[in-house]
Length: 107
Image (cartoon, rainbow, N blue to C red; front, side):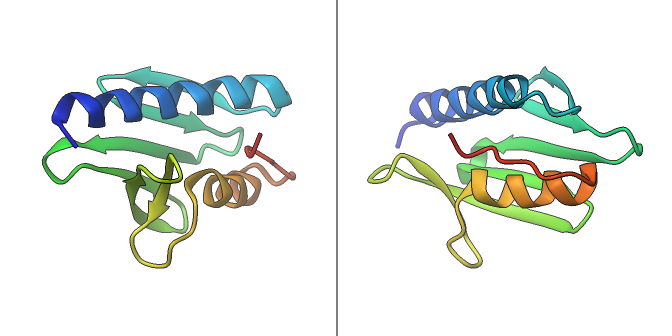
């Protein structure tokens, strides 16, 4: 995948995530800039998604740890490199843990 394609996939994913958070009406503040999406919760915790262009990964830092995702062109999804979990599934769980309420980011 070219660098341009990678950046487009990241941008689309961050936009989808931001839109989904708005759609479901959960109280999570979002802030984007420079390929980074920050999710802020009422309890002061954050989840940060950051593009890593040199390795073509999307990195996520959450209270439960740091995670790396690779884009799978076949399924058009981001898959965690350590166990194959899909990004939006993992983010739903991490957001629920940090928000203290159920969160479903899978559309």
